Image (cartoon, rainbow, N blue to C red; front, side):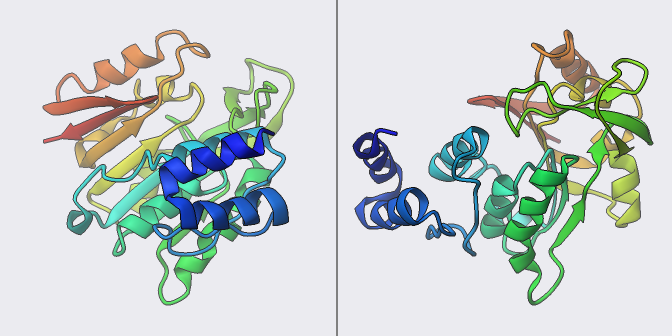
Length: 250
């Protein structure tokens, strides 16, 4: 690593004092990281390329902050939560919000729980699901295409012969299970499974105020088309923020 270059990057986003602290804990001591705008310290796997990439995207560049009014968000779903950096960003910005986090990979999920459990100290704000999210309640295969720990895909069992069997749940089911008639923000980053998610059993869209979707047409042709087709009957405003499509529904 070019330590000087990385410190200058930290300084650009965090300011000198915080950059020094983060650089010391992240690059030298490899300890829990503290930044002023995240309520509790958090961990990453320091030699994991994906963790570092997502740290730079979610924490340094604050890509999930400022999406909605802080006073109007009380329910969030983080689908494809990885190790929880997007979840702790939501939890730190929307202080009255509850968050459902869904992550199918056991290794990611273990660190996700560690990073978010502190937010349950005074009351339960985080609900953890070590499952996949899909259009149907079924069993899927968790497939590792060797693109990093953020790249696990879920595939139908008859489409591939290698992978761990995981349970898949639907957004409709999760909303009903928690008695949520509406959800303020749903973040979806599920490596191509958004194609099926937006093709059937999409009643949940009418209960959603804001959607943050990263589409993966490179994995499943037509994924973006499925998203736009499902939203055709809903009035919305859309903006693009780096990899994400952000839809505000009315």
